[in-house]
Image (cartoon, rainbow, N blue to C red; front, side, top):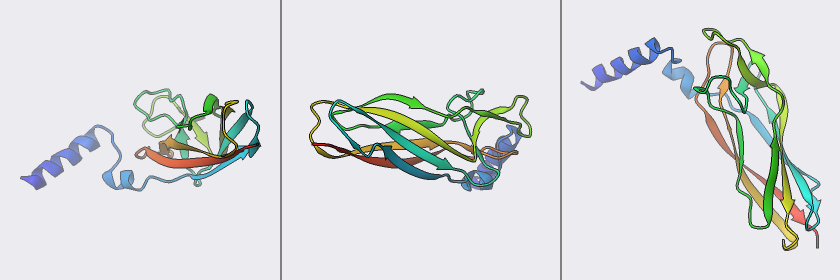
Length: 162
């Protein structure tokens, strides 16, 4: 009974155009490098949280605004501590990727790029280190298949000047 159910799910997935289950489990991972500019910020000023993203060869990730709502958008999700406010997040321009089986090209990011979040430090923030936790969500694709979405924790540390 269980074997028949698993076989039915596999057939339904293949008929629906889903990639094979084995491909889903091998989602390529991006290399993420968080930096802060400037690393030390004064009360009432802003800093940029930069996230450099390096993708494996032949891999792209969905943009922050995919053309097809069925795809998972790239998102930098920040959870700033008290005294820090996110004022903007900037993504690079998307490029087109023609993927086998898709009528329209996918809007993707490729190779190496940087996502920038600007944060404002409140005048009331205490001097010292502030850790800004976040998460980078993305869905990797190649020219034939899109893989399962990945959510990766990322942190930045900025120093509030006395």
